[in-house]
Every structure is written in structure tokens, then in C-alpha cells.
Image: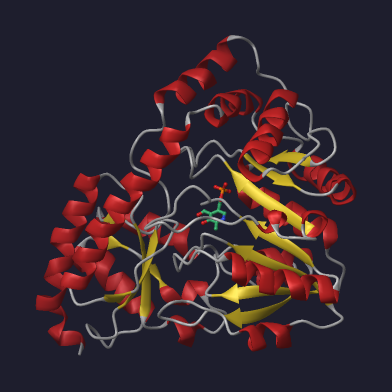
Length: 389
Ligand SMILES: Cc1ncc(COP(=O)(O)O)c(C=O)c1O
């Protein structure tokens, strides 16, 4: 009874692991959602907006005040001139931003290049939009790509390349040189860059986020996707946005209108308050995540996982090959049931599950106390996992 498209993908493994965490009362390091509160001033702004009567549909492509704030941020942070009337679409999270953008630009038979391992949603996104995905490997342990492999992925059918930086699940932050290499190929093959920059403020050890739209010649061929979800710890608000050329925006707005009509109106008002937070909010955000990263990295290394140090975002891809002979799914089920920590099996981030079979992904967007409890539980693995080897 299901459509060919819906039959081609399974339910989200990440959300499945969250349900298993609830059943087994495990600490949920699977789904990337904070267990701490959003900043008080933006919660108050949301309550105020509701009480002041902002409770009906906003303009379909986003409340003017919020689009103005997004354009002002693009100007102050990236020196980019973005017309809020013609170049911004406010969406229900980055999730809708990505699918609306793909539906607006993809024709049957078009190819979309995706770096692998990839954020789980991009697989179903390409199927729903009718695109044929072509995967280019990010090579462990530093998750670099080989420029020749990338070049070989481009051809006359390539319509777009999806870049997620800072990257989920690897923690890679694409350097300006890497973006320039991608940009050169986009220009050579007349390809769009769709960049998911949802972790732009979460970078460590002096790494800096680079926006593809700021690379020479790329502003008009870049679709920049972002959201309030991660930067302001409001994943449940479902407010994101797309910045693109006026021509692309026309298409994205039409798709968005018929997918969702609009994002929550009062939360867009609160978004204006969020974007007005001072610079130190972002410095503190990155510093607190770096502390959490170090806590979880140490716990994983102490428990004999092999992990490279994330440069950004809030995930660790942990290689458990030295700990257990189980495959990633069985190991993740063992962790959630017997150890009490929910993680995501690595195969969720690869087209061929075999490539992810030695990895699990853990997130560290959690209170220190949550991470400390998880650390204590993880130390039990080495004692128990003798049976798996
Ligand atoms: C790379 C990436 N893009 C998009 C999303 C989803 O964002 P949103 O909650 O704004 O839809 C996530 C959430 O984990 C993510 O990691």
C-alpha cells in the first residue's frame, strides 16, 4: 500500500534509539537534543509573544521582523547583503529547510553529491525529492575528502552538493581551502551548494566556521540553511531558515507554503530576541560545549574507544573495534540495555551499512552531571565486553 518512495527508507534510527532509551531508562546520548534549558530571555520572549496576541499565521515565508534580524546577522557576521524581502524563507526547522530546498531545485534524474558519513535525513531527503545521491567519502580518522574523488563525483547530471559544516556525525569543520575546492567544482559544473550550517557557532580549539556563501562567486549558487534549534537549545521550537538568491527563493517559498504554510509565529518573534543576544553568548556556548566534549572524549578513551577529536558540532564518532566484535546495531543495543547509555549505530550514517559497522555516535549536548553518569556507566563496558570478543 505504500508509495515506492516511502518504501525505500526506514524510520529514523536516531529517534528509534530515543524510544529504546526511554524503555530501558538509559541515558540518551543518541538524539542531539540538550537536556538543559534554553536562555531565559528567549523563553520569556516566546511567552510574551503569545500573550501579546502573536498567535495566527505569520506571512508564509516568515515574519518580517525575524527576516530582518536574519538579514542583519548575515551582514554583521559575513558581510553578506541579503534582501529580507526576496532572499529569506523561514521554515519549520532546518529539516523542512532542506527538503523544501531540494524539492524546489531537483528534477528527476538529477544527482546530488553527499559527503559520507552523512546526517541521517539526507538519505530520505534525496529519495523524497527524486534525486540520485552520489556519495563522496570523508576519510577517518581526520574525515578529510580526497579532491580527486570529489572531482570524479561531478558530471552533467549533478544538480547540487550538500555540505554540512560543522559536521554531524564526524565533528569535522570544513576549512576555507576545502570550501574553495568544492566551490571551484560547483562553478565548473554549474552546480548548487546546499549548506547546512546549523552548528555554525559550535566550534572548538580555534577552528572557525566558514560560510560557503562568502566564497568568491558562490553567493548566488549557495542555499544556506540554518535554524534556532542548536544555537539556542530550542530543538522543539521548529524554527529554521533558508537564505538563497531571489530566483531560488521564489521556488523554495512556493514549496514551503504548500508543505507547512509557515513556522510557529510567536517563536519567530522570540527568534528576534535570540539573534540579538550578545557576542559573549556564542563564546560561552562554544566554551561550554568544548568542556562537555572533553568530558565525553576522556570517558570514551578511558573505556578503550578510538575517537578523533571533534572540531565542531556536538557529536563523537567512536570506533569500538578494540572493544567488541559485535556489529554496530548489536553493540548499540547492548549499550542501551546492559550499560544504560543510548547511542546511534554508525551504519545510520552510511549508505552501505558495513562501512559504519565499527562505529557508534554519541552526542554531548547534555549537562555535565548527565555526561558524568554516562562516563561511569561506559567504564563498565571493558569489564563486560570480554564476552563479545
Ligand atoms: C546536520 C543537522 N541538520 C539538521 C538537523 C535538524 O535540525 P532542525 O531541528 O532545525 O530541523 C540536525 C539535527 O540533529 C542536524 O544535526
